[in-house]
Image (cartoon, rainbow, N blue to C red; front, side, top):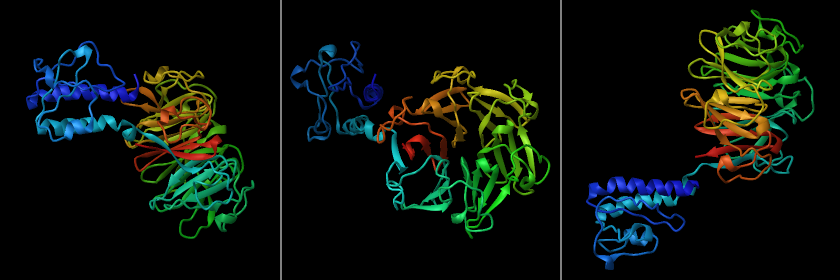
Length: 442
């Protein structure tokens, strides 16, 4: 049944439930596209006054007109049922009717935020040509920052929608530390995080380090990683440690710890930003599927592509070819919460452990501690509900394409979304291969 009809059925039921309290004997609404079921929704007895009955659909004029009583409907399925309403019930019904009639306005919509244009140096974010946006984040002033993996740039879209370049010129490189970020070079940056003070932490992925852009001075520097690929440094200074491709960064709410998806080392590592010390949170370096209840630091992982932390301190680890979501709890134990490990797109609305994914590459946590997953190769965004243990689809119909902006998110086409960000009650999607950033407006 279409969503609009569902809402109108709900309206019928809602009115039938409240009508008796207002002394209304029978409640019935008739919509042109909806034929009432054979069993009517009675709230009283029929009236013999057939002369007062009408056969057309309800209109706003019928509800708020000058008449003190209004005949609502008559249909073959409902015989001679009718409703006489006093002004108070007319007001109630008008409110319910308007709610149902405006279901399209109330429904969530997918909206373009930036990119999708053809102008390389456009001032407007909506007209700009982005190049592989993989992630977004925001500062406290509401400015949006976009990291481009293939474009090797960090862009800024201010609150007026004006786009500017913060770091990178489009060329691959590793130079620039100690100078203006605008003159620095990046190499396949996949991720970013904005600190409460406005500093921007960039996951300079193929340079194997995290670089910081100072909010006050605009100077770029390395705060994590020696830039040499490898594995070393746990228990010591993060600047001297070796990493194997930093694909995801996640700041805690207090911004005192930075979690990193050290994918090529099959580990999730954490930097204490107060002490500067790095340690491993999950992964032994061996490839495999961890056993539920195993200590995370001793467990194998397949390929930890992304990491996120909820407000309870749970650390979520998303595995790309492992096609699974795992969680490390406060005791340091790991378990799988989403995915069978097989490729697929099944399971929405059901048990998350029985669901399948296809190359998921990013995640975030919303205000209710639900986990939003960019199910990249399925061209969908999905949500894991920890309390219910279920998974649901949020956006994307599973088809690769560009259509659907302005309509329901779950009916839209996406193209390899690599990033999701929850900010200010709104979900932002990095629709990477469509070179655009979208948001869901409720």
